[in-house]
Image (tube, rainbow, N blue to C red; front, side, top):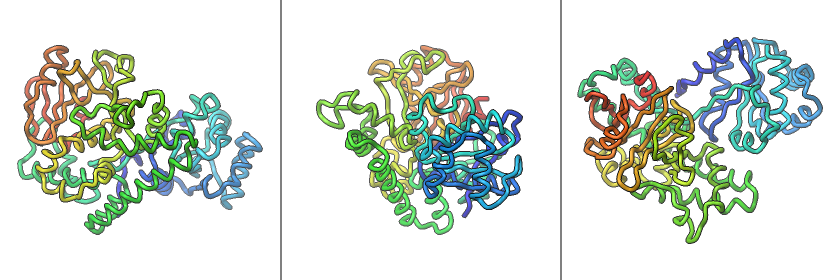
Length: 437
């Protein structure tokens, strides 16, 4: 099964942009970056010239010799054994974080050879960009982010009929009840399967949950191997401690990350670098607390108060050791795990739609709204209720205090509009950005 990824359309827009710059595609390991670029090249260019700095380390020497685009194109042409033509060839530089000279060369390609289409990717590119600092060609590249397969993409892979209905839904009107129930069942399955492309593709072909779980376990192991391979020796133990403690932090009612839960007497400065590495690697998602929801939200975020989630809800299921039946049996998932998986699922979608910096609202110890997002000059509170019990005081308190023109509640209930409060079923979270305009 080949999954149709929405990023292909975004890449086509980049290809046709008048101000196109070399592209840097970021994302965690095994979310499909290389596949997406190759697929895009196959669909939209006459040919693809693919280079991988991990498997072709000799290329590093060639990029160290010269930053001249003419020299670089000549070397790449000889290496590929095929012509590299302006506008007609997509040049893919994979695992580019392994070669800082190649990263820096993007500046000169942007300035002196913009007619060449160059796209870069790397499993730890976020870490490399954070490390390279001022040497990186700021302003000379276009950035994109690719995450795991979304629920929307998953649905198109496993149930074409239901996917077509999903795309036709009007988010202002109730969904026919039979369709609503089918989509809820698909959503529950997605919570267990998650969106790692290999797991989704295998499940779509075989319906084999055990095989999907084995793939998830393999991905988690590959993440752990990255810790030992790419992190300085002094930081490795702390990264492993944060990583191993993540699901325990989320299992608490308030989800707030506490250093003392990692190790008695632990301090922030001892673990900040470890958390930053996990976030830059795209393995962990972070949401900061905001007490005063004003624009811009980032200016009012509390850096000392945050929650850490997994980059993929299916991988979180594996870290919890949950069986797929826990999701498929329905209410057990919601009652026993208190919405942890639903929150993680929602955050993944918000990151795709609104960017990596995400926030939640707190008012002392009395109220909390799971997420608040910024769209233009609006702040939209989003409450997440894992089941169909939507009684909660926090969102009501937020609305009474700040009078937002729109509030969203995500739950297992059908679509309903109550004045400024829009109730959406959880399976429609991928359509929030188009719904709010």
